[in-house]
Length: 387
Image (tube, rainbow, N blue to C red; front, side):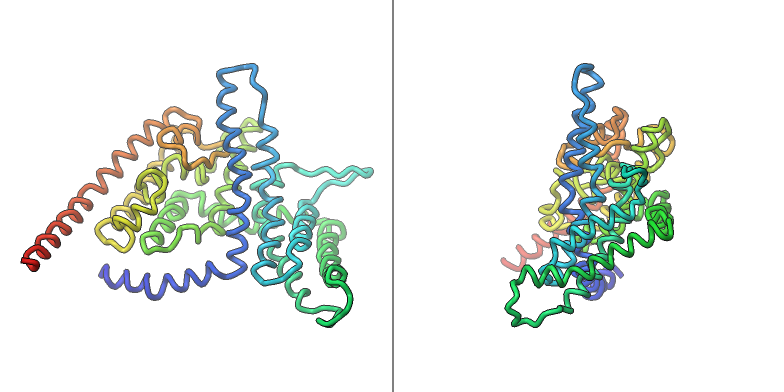
């Protein structure tokens, strides 16, 4: 049975997944998020420093840095998706396309315009605006890519290339901004709220207990077959980030955080040591060196742990034993259980992390023993043949 599953995953499923990952539309989202992650890292560093404010009263407030790093994530992604999509399509208008994506994103944020003043809701620029940034970036890239294939000039035109680029981008940019103007001014529609409403079922699923467990289990399951868990990023990561943004906003308004499914929760508990709860936060040598990947002895305990661990995390947070994350923290390379405390700002997370370590060790132990015995038998058989 296991052999059939492995053959199916290796020969049929993996090639199809890799084909999807290499699709320029999907790859542009993935690359954009990866490129913009340093902004989140800056916000995470600010979070660590903010803990010192609880001890030293005279330290400066660095929260504004977080507002303009993590808080600008959606804005930056709106540029990058348009840019990368044009790059992967082999078009030269990638910079102006990225700029157009950013401008249209800002229009669709539905700012309030009064007496020459333009007022934006700051929270919409960040992770809360991720879904709008993705939709806007892909739409702008699609229109600009379509227009780039149709030029006003012949290939052998004596007109300089930069002038040709101006005229070729003029019509699609005008069209895109007219779309934004028509939606926000003529129809008076808050497109941001529409996008949030459309994607709310996905967010609700991921924030539920089964959805959270699956969002942790599926990347680990794919990883055991040599498929990078990052393939799930375009679908899951925006939900995680939007969930954290809602938690931050809720606590700022004096309310309780409710979204457990965040990347901070993953780094606090579910990826203890790396995906699949392995070792040292850099688990590729173990995954492909032991190996865990394509090894039924060690694949199964990894699957079991990626159901047990998120279940524990979800349970302890849902009943209030450990704080739900309300600050950005993506410094995955900080050792556990220190990372567990920093991600949740709750000392009880240290105890839970230690308990998870013990549980996952107990799960792995009998499978590891069985694998060790199989290798010993294999070595004995090879020694007999050699004699």
